[in-house]
Amino acid sequence: MQSENPFIADFVKLMNSAAGTLAGVGREARDSARERFKELMGEMDFVSREEFDTVKDLAAKAREETEALKKRIDELEMRLIAKS
Image (cartoon, rainbow, N blue to C red; front, side, top):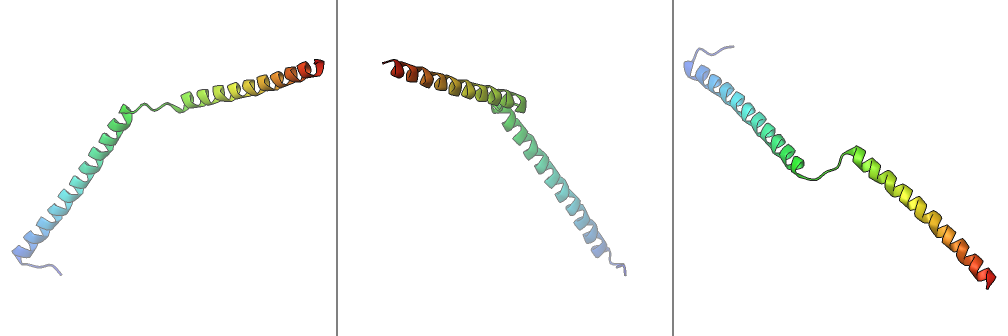
């Protein structure tokens, strides 16, 4: 059932227009916030995954070398104690 009342028809058009405008404002706000977040993240000193993995591998190798050297020092100390 459609109304013949021009006031109601105009009111419905106005509400549809307002809803569309509100949706547009919401999209604009979301896009603006997204851009600001990207800019903020771009200013920070983050490393890439590749750089992180490289440093992680280097740290693991350094840890292994340190453990091997500690073991070697312990063995050498034991030999010195045994000679005494």
